[in-house]
Length: 304
Image 1 (tube, rainbow, N blue to C red):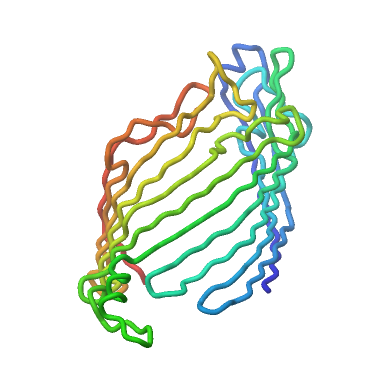
Image 2: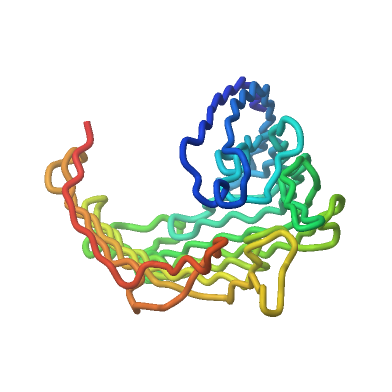
């Protein structure tokens, strides 16, 4: 049983100097100072079960302060209603996890995210108002599974009657693990101007899968794909000519790391968006924000 408590404070000040769009509309530029002082609590529970498994439950409180653009909107015809307060988020989770064998790791849980006092925009008479309005709830299920395929073969071919596995292919050549993680989720606003609609950027599924290779904690490489369902880029779920719908997409990444000197110096590299997919995961007021095409990186990592 692990209780938690922390106090957080965020102070921010926005002071516009030049804003041509507001000047053209004959509106004053904005100045705002925001101070959020928030106590946060949490509680984690775990009960261990043989063999190497555990049931667990967590509840924790989080918050989201107003952003700069919400405290002082840069566009014309946007107003802030009073002094914006931070949004409050309660996270609930309960599940089962474990590593019952050397070659199997799993974790499955159900969760709920309750987001109240949410900051959003409402439109009336050609003026958008930013205010604390709305509450959303998201329910979902997480599942993670990692199976060492070489470890399975080792146990089948090199295991003994006591269930112990002698040194085999995993130790000599490394492990090749199949990795998969699935999140299924559904949510909507339960109060406020967007009641009944889906919160922005909430897709109904996120699926990750691929292969991970590791040799004696010295070399590691992974090929992982990320599949994301469609979502809306706005809380009011605009469609038609003003559509803010983000289509489902998938992207694969290749990464590797090789230790050159114990755990202190490593060579790292990777290729993001390996298959050069054209997609976008964000829409701004001036249009879509396209994702990066295929790109690569390499470097030297020093840990001390």
